[in-house]
Image (cartoon, rainbow, N blue to C red; front, side, top):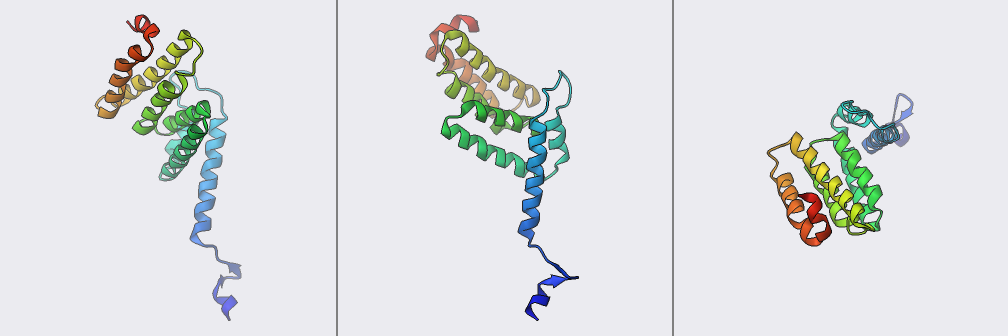
Length: 168
């Protein structure tokens, strides 16, 4: 009978899509648990980093999902939430150049101009600079990160003249 062809050993077979959905959901739940953890101490492997290392090929799917969500938050104007997701991507994949560049751009182009005073603008600039410095320590030959760091240093004093003396 037709019904009999769709069952095996008395159980209804599941499509391959259901298996992938369960794996993605499981990966996202692990990621959520890791994001809600305490901040790590200096020199300590983060929980999120350890989860990322153990995910294997699933890490790519989770990182792509985080990128899509971060960009959606960025378009909605929720820049600090997007920055948190980019930080999570960098914990899962510390060598991710795209997340490094997007995070630095978010700090400089999104959050820095909206700061209320020169001190706050300088702090956002330092955040962007710190992200790029960390990336250059991990991958010193990365042309994309070198280019972004040079652009950051070269253009900020022009756009924010009050910060020029603090950078010297």
